[in-house]
Structure formats: C-alpha cells, structure tokens
Image 1 (tube, rainbow, N blue to C red):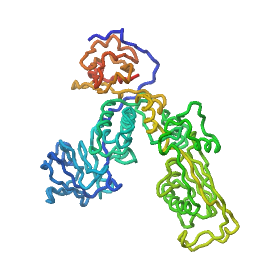
Image 2: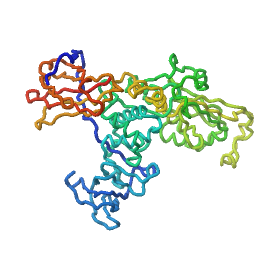
Image 3: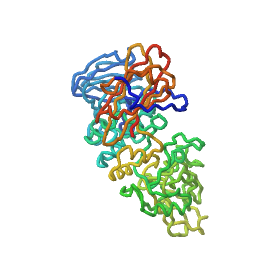
Image 4: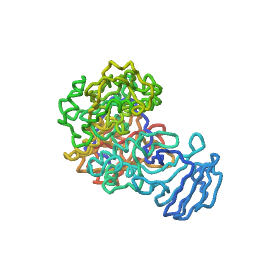
Length: 562
C-alpha cells in the first residue's frame, strides 16, 4: 500500500541526537523468597507435566541432562558449591556446577512454600543460581512480562479498586519492572523491596484483563520508560522524587516525579502551623476514603523511650542516625521530637530526637518511620506533626521493672518532661508518584487509566516502547504488539525518528503494507496518524530491517496514544 500524504503529518524538528534504544524487556527474572530470605541450600519442586533439567555450565541452553516424569518430587541440595539432584528421595545427579534451569509446560510448584495462603506455583522456568559466597543459591522465576504482571497487579492493588485503576497499576508495574536490575542473578525480588509477586496462584480474572488490555503500553518521558514509583495513600499532596529520595544534588534524576496537589489552589506546606492545619483537616483530598488518609498514635514517654532504644540502634546500623546510637546509655528524659527538614507535602526528611541523655538526628523518610514504631509497626508515613500532652517531674528516671536498668539518674529531680507524645499525620507510603487509593477514586469518578497516570506523573506520554530498526542479514522484522482501546483513546500516532537519514523503511500495520517510504525518508521526525488502521484489541506494527544500502544507520519508532 502506498503511503498517502493525506494522512501524514510530517514534522521536521530540531532535535538532539536520539539515544540508541535498548531492547524491550519481555522477560523478567524474579528472585523467590522463603521466610523473608532469598538464599536457599535446598529446594523441592514438582509439576503436572514433565520437567526438563538443564545444567547451564555444560553447554548452555541445549545442555539438557534429564527429563523428569510428571508429579515427581525433585529435590536439589547444595553441597560444597555444587548441586545434587534427587527424585523422590533417590540421588540422580551430583556435583552439577549450575546454574540449573528447570522447564515445564505446566506451572512449577515450589514445595513447602506458600504464597497468599496457597502452594506457590510459577509459570515460565525456575533457575537456581549460586550466590556470591557459593554456599547458597537463589531460586529465580524466569517469566514473560505479561505473566509476571498477572502475578503482581492483584497483589499490589486490591482488585476491588476497579478496572481502570488496575490498568493504571499494570502500566506502572510494567514500567517499574522494565527499569529494574537489582542483581546480576535477578531483576527483581518478589517482596515489597520491589513489587509483590506471588506467581500463578494469585492470578485474578479482572486483573488479568487489565494486564492484557494494557499490553505493550508504557508511560514515557522524553521517549524513555519512566521509573513509575507508586504507594498506597496520599495525604493530599505527593512529593518530588529529589526531596524524598535525592542525595542533595541540584539535578533531579526523575523530573516526571513531581509534587502533585489534590486540591486546586493548594500551596506547599512551609511552616509547622501549615502542617498542623493541613493534617488536622480532612477537606478536599482524593484519597479521603483510605483508612490511612488521616491517622494518629499516642505514646507514653516511657513507651516511646523504650521504642527509641531499640529502633535507634537498628537505624544506626543503616547509617541513618547521627551520632550513631549503640544503646549503651538508654534514652531517658525524652523532651521533644523536632522536625528539621520537610518537603512540600510536610513530609519530614530529617528529624531530631531531643532527650536528657542525648540528641540524635534521623534522616530519610523511611528511617524516620522505622524509628517511631507503634506496636512494632513503623509509622504509615513521615507526613506528621507531634504534640506533647501534660508534664510531670521525674524524680528518678527508670526502675528495674520499667526499663530493665538499675542505674538511676538523680540529676533529673527538678526537670519536667511530657507525659504523652501524640503523632498525627496523613497518608501511607513514601508519597512519590501514583497513589493507589487516588487511582481508585479517580477511576470511580470516571477517569480512564491514561488520565490517572497523567495526574500523578508529570509531562509523560502513553506510548509503546521505542524500538530501534537496523539492517540485519537474516531479514528478521522488528515487531511491536499493543492493545488499542477505541473507548479510551481518540487517536494514535506512529512516530518515526529518522535522524540518521535512512533512505527507506517499509512497515506493516496489522495486515496493511506501507512500502513506499523513500519519498518521505529525508525528514528527521515523522508523525503519522494511524488511528484508522488500528482495530479494537491487539495490534501489530512491524518494520522490515533496513536495506543493505542503509547498513550502519537506524530508525526508532513508537506509537503514541491520545
């Protein structure tokens, strides 16, 4: 089919040299935890279909050493940095170097491991790979992106939050996984340290549909997938990445993670009075129906001193307390919890503990939340203010029954200290990026998932992953598969970045051929309205490799939705 200029909007723009695009991540590697650990010395697995075993050290993916019958229990034990493999208790193979790869046409169950209250099962493959000390191994699920997201979305967001909120979560989770690279052994872990992933036993119909109907869709900033941070509940204002996680440098690594305000006309919270007034009110927030939209906790002074004795030691080991607290002299005579630095939302990023026995500064919102624990749980957020209630003279601080210490401090006789500390705040989580309760409420209000994503991420566009097209000897086409919903989008544009001046780049949209591209190849950037060529559902755009005369050149293409 000859490309018609009637449906072309060709833009010759001043642009910088585009960054060569890395391949789209279609497979992820997830470390599976057991009892909060990612290190194993033995593991048992089984499947309803035959399991093939590959020892990657002896020839790579073609080095299959065995096929185990269905429903056999395979146990792998590590001994002296090598793997021994047992079937139904009988030793079959020993001193395998690994990594070992286990593959089945059915889900693979990890025996004696429960996820979400049921036996843990995984699609894809399981890889066992030595940790750095060679005394243990990681169990890594190697799984395609779509099935990974099926095991993430219903565990990161309640399915009751609705279809559009789940689709926003699916895109955010896809972006997050695309950017993740936690270890040489794996991309992500299955816990809150990354994204909660419970595998195939946690799939749900509505979240599966959300994953399917956002297939191939990303949130991009300047043609790169954003690091789509998200959290449970906003107290009414989200925060800049740099204010919460930054290292103090003037450059903001994630300019799309900017403070967003629920209430029109809301200003940053600059004073302690601003913070107190804001978090004492429930007016105007999108997340108002969250149980953590506003919260309050009270501590007796003795209770909080005991908490701080433990938590300051823990966070000192993490390097978040100055001076470091070793617990030799117990916190006594607690006078004040003093905010030193706050963000636009009033989030405390540096805090001072003021006591008779010493003052300690705590930094980072997570460190602060972990220091001020209630009932052994950290604070929901660092968006809070502190009030003290009542005073009493402390004739002698500490008794054996109250503190476990025999040492008394008679120098406290004439001093007064608060009886109670009341901490009042709002929100749940780090407060950067998309609020999940906010997504829920925006969806309830009729917003589609692109509107939800654009509410929380600044200056983004909703697009397919940018793909690079090169010359190759094998005539392998470059393909992008994506879901287009005509009830969600008004239009779709194919962008082709031809900065390198390729002379021809034929492509297809589904079954339609667009061959005569030479006449438009001199433009740096092409923007082509392709809405009329897309169907409601899955679509495929494919580019032929560049011709030999264009060897050494490349183009970059993507589809943007509006």
